[in-house]
Image 1 (cartoon, rainbow, N blue to C red):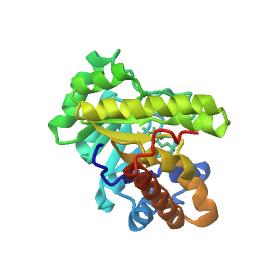
Image 2 (image 1 turned 90 degrees about the horizontal axis):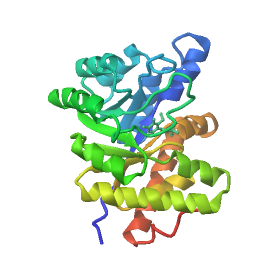
Image 3 (image 1 turned 90 degrees about the vertical axis):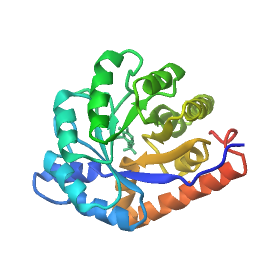
Length: 261
Ligand code: PXP
């Protein structure tokens, strides 16, 4: 059996900025949220600077880099503009995602297999200045192999379809999606990639995702910002950590694979 490593929690603060931008002022401040999240025991902060700046803005990214002491994961589309900003800000890591202007959130995984010619040089530009590169991909063997071939350090497996199937009580689909994610994690780990997962996770799905062998980080945003309304951000982050630790304990007992729905 694989050795079970502790699992990291990356918290995405985009939706603190969504609330701020709804009124156009400075509050609530996503950097204050990031500092609170850090104090509550998160291992990293994620923020997505979208082309349309609908939530996080350039100055937020700069302040996050300057003010937090845990790793900053800069989520972005692989455009020339974003590559230039990331090379200037120098986050710990960049997670490259597909981005469509009209989508509400990142809908699918990056087509690493089909867009290698465009992605390869951009990945190299990030790595050149010491930024770790993660590709947000579907749980698909071809995408994972392509990520490895393109020189990515990390793959983040898209858990959105699994979480949606769970939320809508489509049990068979949820089971199948979970099996795909677990197989992809195995595959990626076997190729020497660091394996992260995220999108749509809540306390219950995080227990299960944390139990997948090979997964070393979960990135979670929308649910935690929503929970913060009811219990406060610190409490939500602490509870999420506990959920993930419970999942890790399950993994240590080797019971992850059957626990999907
Ligand atoms: N990981 C990636 C690559 C994402 O695009 C997102 C959404 O911004 C997340 C994780 C977090 O997803 P959620 O907000 O649904 O927890």
